[in-house]
Image (tube, rainbow, N blue to C red):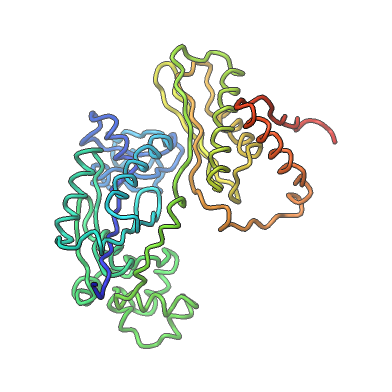
Length: 394
């Protein structure tokens, strides 16, 4: 038995843009940004666009000034969910000791999976397979703990494979700028630099911990340990459900022409998504609506709740509002409802405001259970609860 663990951190490169390129090969080698309209913000940009200084969180108008050829595509959560599922399904063939870190990255304990093999050879095969099968480029970091594996995967993008061992820390990790230290906040970096700390090595060697603690508080020891290459080697498979997205979409071959037809279709999709979340004991914080019109114009918009939820009525209220913002008087070819920022309900604790406490109906859960039981008995959705008219005076 090995005395140390072999951890991989596998990170999909420019994931949203890579999904679009995988679906439409004509986009390859073109600068692409993912985000809203001209007044929106980019969620990400592919590497072709990054050559012009375009990056995530940049206003679309500024991005187009830097790169006039930039093609901006709407956010498409349904598409990203599809490729994320392919990614995680493939990785699960190597080990069950896998922990998603987000929709497009994961930690894997590959100690057993690399027995009798060189970890680099296994990493090369994973990288090659994901590119050939799904057109998904990935960078892979290999290390004895989560922190070093994560730092290694960031060292070469796109399509990099990097090994970072504890004995490499002074040579490979310490020369990096302090802002590259995984987990340190962007707002904290300028404060740390006031102490004369420019690199991770400067931080690791800094003698006065009290001065650092003024900015990092009780995280000081943790960050100093990381700067010396220390970190947890535990991969928690119980987080498999976290960070996934749950969605549903439907294509209408004959198109939908009436607004009410579209709303009813969205209602069914939202109900399906809500049920899937509840069945898996999940709740989501972000919900998105996607629309494809008959001329194949794609539009999407999302909303983030102040708390996680799987409640159909709360979700559908936002779905309707989002759709009203997206609606055009044109036939609809596809509708989609998706959620992201998903967590297990048992890990969540929602602090109710006095207004939410007043609105909460204790009997709702019991009603839901009765309706679900009746519908399950007849194997048909015979009964469903009505939605209160918000304009009614109570």
